[in-house]
Length: 305
Image (cartoon, rainbow, N blue to C red; front, side):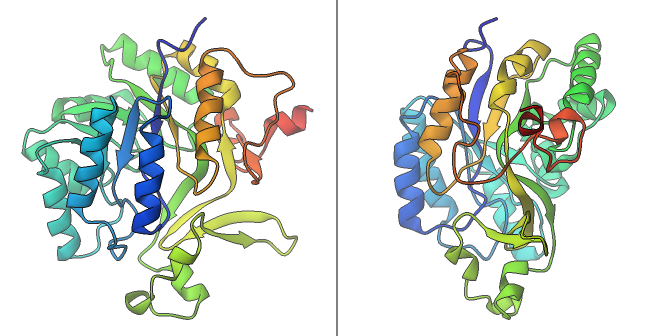
């Protein structure tokens, strides 16, 4: 089957801390990439203040003129009244739909009668939860990153049987977001307190690798967020995703080589994977274990070879 007409590609929010110039250059290029949806905003840490809401709105307007659907992603861990004030402004932006990544955003959007995208951190695992979200105004939802292909296929079938046809989005590329903490691990690495971190995470535009004693990259530290050490790559699964009813494949931004990643997924959804197909798009270990019901760090394609 052809997946080009059914499976959309989305660009997730930048999870790392970049400079204003880097954000501007990145989204200027992204406007011409073959994808349909772009998420904007700071979803990790409120101390990353280089970009204000007005800056994201300005970028969003430019991307809209390029034909992209723009989504503003909310912060996943709300820790203070200041965070809540910023969240209210984000939800009340009046221009773009918001991706709710925690219950605070969900409550604000639902109370205001505003449509929203349900992020993976809301942990939606069953039709009953999705029905509640649909009544609250959900327009699209992202599957939990650890959900297997088998479990998701069953969930999508159950949703269809119950008349829930909201598009599902799968995290198809990037370091997997695994956990958030009130403690900043990157600041701790530099022996700095969280509230005087001097923004050291900006030194690591693709995160800080945490290796085991055997030198295996187990996790990627990104301020208060912990990501997988390996980079999930489900390029080879996009045809199957479309067949089972997935509507959107999400690609998480990298600091370098993202245009090639998008082009590779665009080719994959059109059935144009080259043969032989190089497994790694960038210099990073690859994983797909969760999708296949195995430990997340596993690489089933490498094992098959």
